[in-house]
Image 1 (cartoon, rainbow, N blue to C red):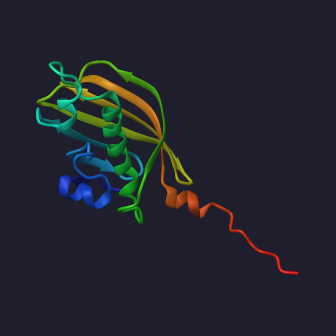
Image 2 (image 1 turned 30 degrees about the vertical axis):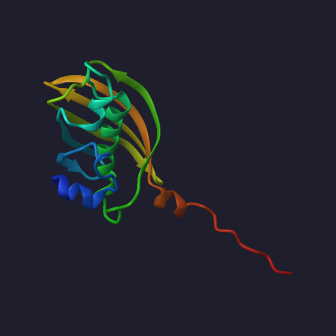
Length: 159
């Protein structure tokens, strides 16, 4: 498949998160079913900097992971038939927070799909600022529409 590039307006067509919880601004290289790269611009007025922490603002670790998750989900949501569907984070492992993510920086998000079968995606992502890894994680995403197709249908016996 060819590479896809999405600005914020077009990201909203593919996935359900909205401001203030949309944690990605631009996807500059999506290879459907394989990987997604892009970024989140972090301004001093972002809601989480106001509360995490006073006089020492930094992006909460789980929002860093959420940024990776949202970017990676675009790899699946851009596959044919998945536009606008819901994806969920099922688990996250091997989380590493290496450096604080502070206001007025650009958090680059590089993600890849390790495997995607039957609605379950095994993924890896890393966040970078100034070409240095600031966070990384392994995580699993689920696409409920695909999983629901695999559920057995109940049949009622009549005697």
